[in-house]
Image (tube, rainbow, N blue to C red; front, side, top):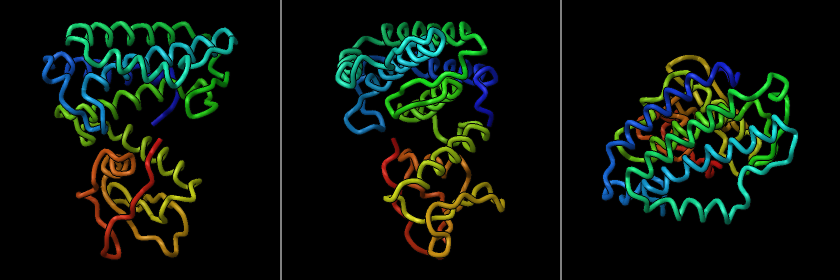
Length: 238
């Protein structure tokens, strides 16, 4: 999958539409129910997605203007905004999701070509502005799964599953707490190696299932391990 922001905007639009359709089915009890994220209700997840869109607008504005603008005012402010937004009624959540998505789309459209070459400061450190649209797509697709409302990793597009798997595996390669493993996906000879290959088990499955397992969104029950044994335990992602 490309990370070209102009080519990914359609994918973001589609993912946003899918999320909005799911969110539109929630009543107050649904929003108060637990998500797949420990300690977060579905309302927390939706509030986070709305504020994530606004945080990315800040970074896009920073890239466009050259002004140093943080994604969030602070970690504490981010958490407070999510907590305050979580218990809102369904119609307020839906309106916030729509409006914040529109603001994000407008900020992307306002970017001149030269601004995509900028580097911005995310919560995870410096990022090229060209990755911000991919970052939004990743948030939408993964947290849609976290809503535990019928949307699963198997519903991700093949391109998204491959891109996420490669990104997560590349990140694990630099971590000393990551177990050695060879990731073989989609029944092919394609492999991603983490750690020392000679001592590493081969973990095989679809790209989406491997990515979901590595990001903590699936226990990996559909994956196979060679030689037979338990799945390695990947470290917490992000």
